[in-house]
Length: 275
Image 1 (cartoon, one colour):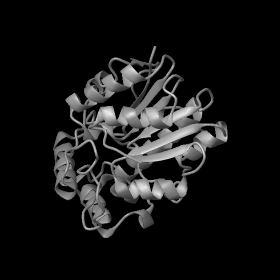
Image 2 (cartoon, helix red, strand yellow):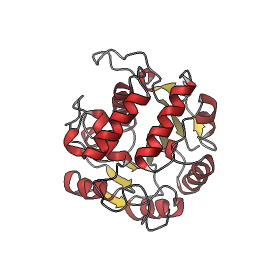
Image 3 (cartoon, helix red, strand yellow):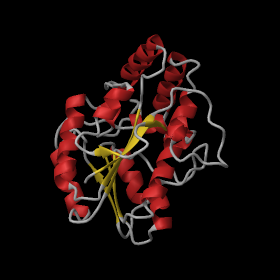
Image 4 (tube, one colour):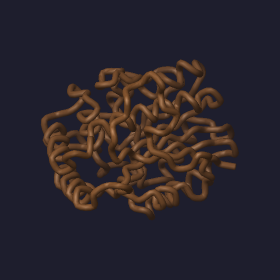
């Protein structure tokens, strides 16, 4: 991928090709935000991952990110949602608020950067959440220097920032993740936090994981990398993972009045500090 995002997933509009952000929307139940190609890609993944509750896994990932932002917004005013996907305005199956809305409820004066390689995400984001204190930028996480440039342009790097990496690191090679984390470490000030969720192969049927990876690659034309708990832990380096460490999304500050989680290979997540 290039620094101008000209070849990232969804970097140019083609409704006949499935892209991650719209397939993710289809799994969350936001059908109006997905095209037939995206819904077909979701259907193929359900078949490949039969019995693994993939819809519920993705919806719980989204819910865990809402809880994480609500928690972090108690003390933070700046947020960079990197690879954040299309705002859904509560139209998904669980009627979850957008992460930007969650931050606004806690911190009306917050500053928010949504960055994504998908042009449809950028267009929708500017229409739905654009406004004072909000910037929506097209950029690719595989160009970390450009990501940091966008952060510097729209946020104050001299003050603490929460970086959100929700369900995006599994689209990067380990080398690409380390390059991104190194750039973030260099630009973020002490007291900043990185929050990440990640697809995992831990406690999952290896044959089904392989089938799911093959189906995803066939439908989207991009690689995806499920990782073990130890591998996901290592991605945080050099940031310092907070207690209780790497946990399942259903274990992160569970909602006592929310739906009962179903047994499934839920995404893993961590919060990591910049000392």
